[in-house]
Length: 112
Image (cartoon, rainbow, N blue to C red; front, side, top):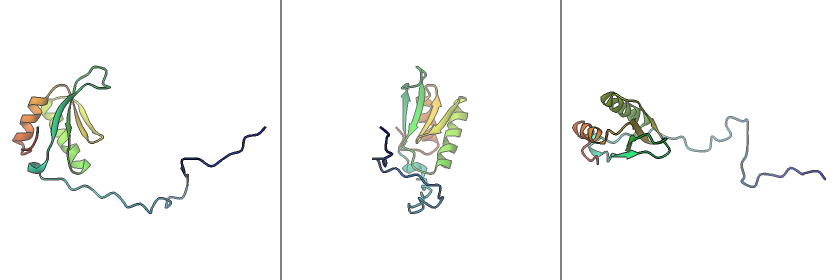
């Protein structure tokens, strides 16, 4: 008995044509809100980090370049490592109070 190849039930299609998916609108660069309108949230996280503590800065509205720049400033101020991914600025260690104070000093007045 031989198996017959059937079409995929999920409707997934493969193509080597580079213009195949050009009917979708291109993502526009998000405009960064002014500092006074940003509602950043600073919180502590240990999930899926092998017990290591990180400080997360969430709810940044704007371009990835601006978020990367803010992340770099925070990493430099804290003197520690970190990254920017999945919409979060991740700083290694517990720096909640310091980051909150710096953000407010830098004009992010709605930060909690």
